[in-house]
Image (cartoon, rainbow, N blue to C red):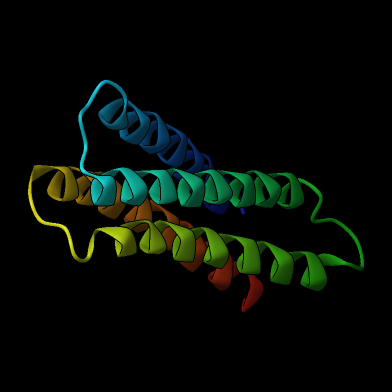
Length: 128
């Protein structure tokens, strides 16, 4: 359980940092309409991801008692949704090419890998 909590903490921190980095790329740039919309959508997805990871961390602290299985299912659902949001962030860049897409992809791949690791650890707890 401690390892899963640690993984969630690292994933949440990475998601917050990624949001700040993406926002920083957006500000002060003369982006095409397509890039601007893709970045805005990505920021919304990352905000949702952060919220879901926060809910997961709160729930992980309340895992005692008869509701353990239900709480674990909720945590798995939220972490899985966070991972989906991170993946969806890149969808808006499918038609785009260039430096913005590759830079953001690097950030998103990192946070998605961390979230995937957290999900794997959580899944192992609930199936043990």
